[in-house]
Image (cartoon, rainbow over the protein chains, first blue to last red):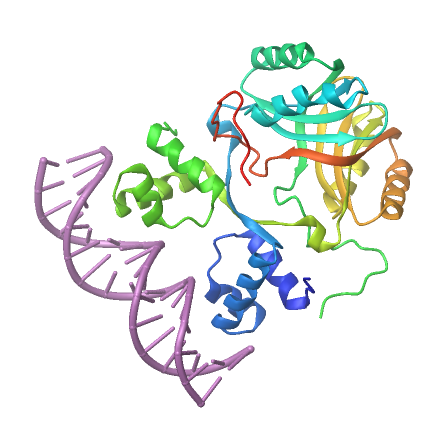
Length: 164
Length: 164
DNA sequence: AATGAAAGAGTCGGCTT
DNA sequence: AAGCCGACTCTTTCATT
């Protein structure tokens, strides 16, 4: 399995910030030579630490201005959850869907172009078999949003050592 | 401003799926020549439609196994919200923080390495001035998670099967 | 892990429609 | 105005030390 050393973490941080950073720039940043960096990145890719690369797009430019979180309650029977999960997989408006503990069954993050679209989306979700309840929270302002899904740069770890 | 034609949308879709796709591959896919694709991508970048590129990292490989959504209630006075927003900006565990309407004030998405870290995080949040209430939902399973933040690729075939 | 070389891609001018 | 062509530069990639 993957044992990540300090250089690996540095490379991952840089690639998370700029996925198109050239190997030359990476090599200079970590103090190694091109081929070494190349070998490390290939290793990280094949080990699955780097799952891929993606362009970050501006949602507003694509006519998707409205973000909302929807908490969905479903019936307990597992058979009844398949229509719901199948729906969120197919729907282009659904950015995320997580099975959670607690009072709700799912937390769903959606992005749509208008309140009307959200209304349609909610109606569709409520009409799915097994769905018993939905509670929506429309995003008024996004305070923070990290795209990578994983953080690496952590300036505020209490009790952690500083970098080399 | 940006007027996106069909080719632009195609390029954006491809780049969202693979941010390191070569211009040659993109050119072949959209039926244009290399320089044309190059010009379009540069235009999309300078217009801000493409905000950047990022490597997608596997959270498990980085020792961050536990994801949770925290709904936070705060006092109404705006002065009191600054400590909270300042905290989430600084905390490396906070992936997202959205100001929402409805019964809660914020929806916060966090990623930590262990339940203990989550406990510490919650205690810190609750100790912030202005925070009146927190409700946590621990993610048991992620059904869907799109990293880009915006969707484009929509096969929209009802009953389509997933890939390997 | 570094060096150096070959293959390929990105980049920029100018030309064509 | 927008796309193609061809040349130059830089990056990626591989064999060798």
